Amino acid sequence: MSGGTLARLSSIYERVRSSPCRWREMSSIASGVEELRVRDRSGAYRVFYYTRLADSVSIFHAFAKKTQKTLPQEIALAQKRLKEMLDEES
Image (cartoon, rainbow, N blue to C red; front, side):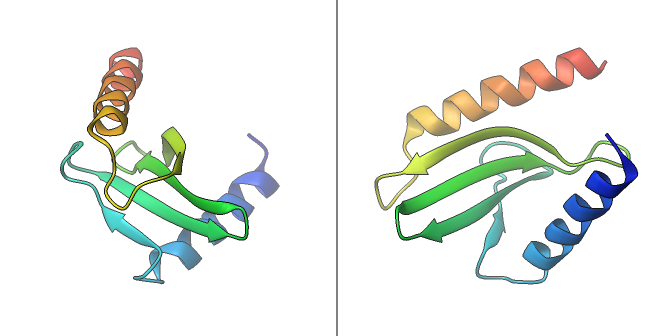
C-alpha cells in the first residue's frame, strides 16, 4: 500500500474514531473489533474492522443494514472471517 493511501486511510480512521455516533466496539465478535456505521440516501451500512494488528486496520466484513438489530448470521459470518484472517496472520 502506498504512503499516500495509508495516510488517507489513517486520516479517515481518526475522523471516524473521534465521532462517537459513527462507530462502536463490537466485543460480541471479538476484542479489538469495531463497527463503522455509515448511512446515506441509499441506506445504512456496517463495516467491521480489527485494530489489534501492528500498524494496520483490517476490514473483514461489510454489509447493508436492513434491520434494527444486527442479524445473528452477520455476527457469525464476521466471527468466521476474523478467525480465518487471524489464522492467516499466524
